[in-house]
Amino acid sequence: IIKSANNQVDALNRKLAISNNLDFLNENEKKEQIQKANFIKIFEAYAREKYSNKSTLKTFHNSLQHLKLFLNNKPVQLNEINRQFCFRFKNYFEKLELKNSSKNSYLQKFIEVVSYLVENKFIKENPIPKKFTFKENVADRQYLTPKELNKLASTPFPEYSFFVCNAFLFGCFSGFRWADLKKLKFADISNNEVKILQGKTKEYVEFKLPTPAIEILNKLRVFSNESVFVDLGSNHRGNIKIKEWVKNAEIKKTITWHVARH
Image (cartoon, rainbow, N blue to C red; front, top):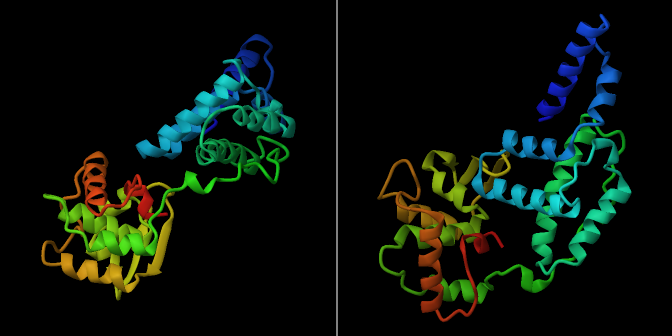
């Protein structure tokens, strides 16, 4: 993750060895040099090396763009990432007309990178304040009530959306993201328990499925022995069908794949 910083250290080592015939820097001196590394470069490298999911990378990109605007595109060294810097960065978001959920999402990416550097002792003390988020407004997070979900489930599916609509319902009962639904296989399910590696977090989740989710699985087994949802298509195409379905159910909310998790 700190490849760019280490490259700077190596370049300095070579320069010192050639010009002054000095030994290579010791570990403490290396860490001191890394303290002067550009945090922006490390932020970019961290996201690129750890994640491949386009949605996650987009959030990292947006977080980074806000960080650059906050800094007026000036570089910032690791030794400048202190508590005062964190408070100033949060205050920058106070003035923006964004949903609090979006502000928290961007701050979370900043926290993730800083926490990694703290954990690996490249930042000496954790600078993140305890309360470093915005209180989310109820309107920020869209969701279906149980009554609305039942109404939607009883509404006929739009044309060519059998797998999309069943996947959305399954997502409501399992909390899976679209990317995880798309790759879900029957082999991931045993004795009504599911275990998968989440695409976004790269962590395993394992839990017993509720009855409505099991009923959906039983209905889909006749179509495939491998993938649960054999014709899910793209995220965009699915959202179009879901919105059409919600409209037919006369539910006046903006509903997308991710609302199933909520």
